[in-house]
Amino acid sequence: MINVEMNILANIIEKPQEIESFRIKSDLFSEFIEPIFKRIEFLHLKSRSIGKTSLQKDMSKEIRDKVDSVLSLVPSKNTKELLDIIRDDRCHTEITSTFESALSNSMEGLDIEEVTRKSIKKLQNILSQNYSNSSSSSLSELGDLFLKGENLSRFATGINGLDDKLDFDRGDLVIVGGRPSQGKTMLCLNMLLNMGFGFVSEQAAQLDYLEKKPLNVVFFSVEMPVMQIMTRLISTFTNIPLRYVKDKKFTDSEFKKVQEFIKKTKNINIKIVGEINSIEDIYSETMRLNSDIGVDVIFIDHAALVDIKSEKFQSRNYEMGHISKTCKRIAKEINGTSVLLSQLSRKVEERDCKVPLLSDLRESGSLEQDADIILFPFRPHYYSRDQPEDLLELYIAKNRNGCVGKVNLKVDLNIQKVL
Picture 1 (cartoon, rainbow, N blue to C red):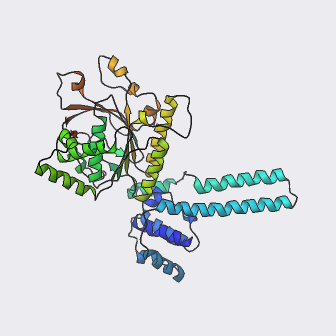
Picture 2 (picture 1 turned 90 degrees about the vertical axis):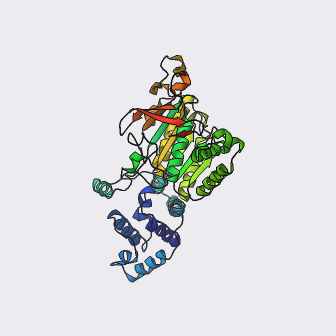
């Protein structure tokens, strides 16, 4: 088991932010590994470089040798899996010891009910200590983290006119709601490309706290086949009209653009996931990808088509509440952002004013309650031909940490692009 512990140390030396991401505590490690972890944690908290000299300072020869061994390891991408191995092993040992103690006590003639009650309580404590997702931090620790700047980075959408109005915080649940053909998927696929390639808007370029590097993003396409998503992305990126991309009717120069786009995708982490329809599978796949590559943002298109297979609920309202709460849970566990697309109810069509309202969120008030940000894309031309066809009004209907209001954006529907 010590080899597993050393591999975890090798990982967090390279990515010390995983200490917070996976809530790693010193009591997880054995006698000679725990001091090394504590030194890594200290150096990380103080924003100091983590290297051989800083790790071996004031350590015994035995621990210095362990540091050398750790530094010789090639970091793994599966910190979560390694942590699960340690927790499973420790849990198995403690449970076995509990059963052996209970058996011994019962054979000695102690009250069987009392022995059983104490054993059950001990087992509950073991499971809670090893698998609880809860964590506590002192105000002093949180203050140090705040000054250090960890976990404060936020995500820009990369869309001009929007990034100066809002950004996505880690842990946010974002709802993008609209009636059909209002631009939900188009808006989110533009965000996906901007985030995945590290494109920033003019506003975002001026803000230090917004991420400027490519992010690891995942798009769960519950509605459309993945190749339809791919054709949209090609059209948006290359500026080749979507109808030509679908038919693969390219000029020589256009075909080179497509080849260049596909070549560039090999150096980024944008994942398009199809054939997953349940919220449980979305959760599992996100956790798997997060342990493999790390996930910053997930998109789910769209909520009304997401199934639930683990439980039976009284109505779709309760199901939608379960889905939104799971998406919020995903955002917190990956320390990223969940973006959930949602159809609005037909009540919009019955009103003279078609601009969406929070009450139009379909089938559940939980979406409004659980969301940190709610966006309503709205194309006036869809309802009135007197309005410009390239106008997309984006309503920020809820923004827990910022302003609300309307942003006027321009779009090119031929290439499904927000300009």
